Length: 294
Image 1 (cartoon, helix red, strand yellow):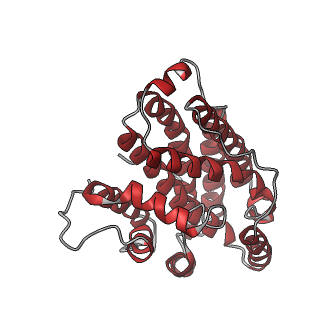
Image 2: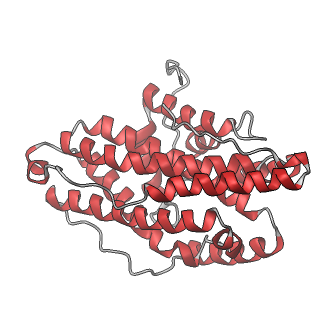
């Protein structure tokens, strides 16, 4: 099931000052609800001593290590993809502060699990920028300065990333069949579901103008790639995607991600994740049985 995104925000095409004021009030109410629930991931009761007693496949360890390093890298985002427009927005700015705070604790929790499993976790990020980070920082600075609707792109892009991450963690829990990892990931998922809901709600509200939606749809269709590329090698991301999304169940999970994004204004028929996996991973056969995405 996808997180339910509720919004009572009136569409701004009403063209009245009262509609704008109502929209701003609704946005702040939604933000207050999110901020009130923001806290470090709850690790009470995690059976850390039992982690090593249950088998973990090399594929699970490799996938979890990759995902932990990606979570760990979010520390650089304030210097790369956090635009001034987003940070000064009364709704998005406080949300990003909470989001960054929570993601940092996810990285620590996953590292603690790897250590309990006898695996040396990747070193904590020192905030060093990759080549991709530097390119993104320059692009973000230029486009956000010139384009007032840049936060809409940030929110739509983020919604797609969060839905992909949410689904990837669910797939990893199912494939690992490890009780402690499943418990830990269920707690991570609660946070990720809230993150997705906020990104998605903001994207939906900011894509109401057809010209904005059309341009952002073009940019995502043309340039979107799964989170982690540039942090990990493309080959490593291909391995993780192939492990998590191969087979009929993995393909169905991929389509659920795209189905959520298709409900955004202007995104009817969009299939960014399925398109990328089909092109880069090629883990589905033409004879693969169809599985419902409902």
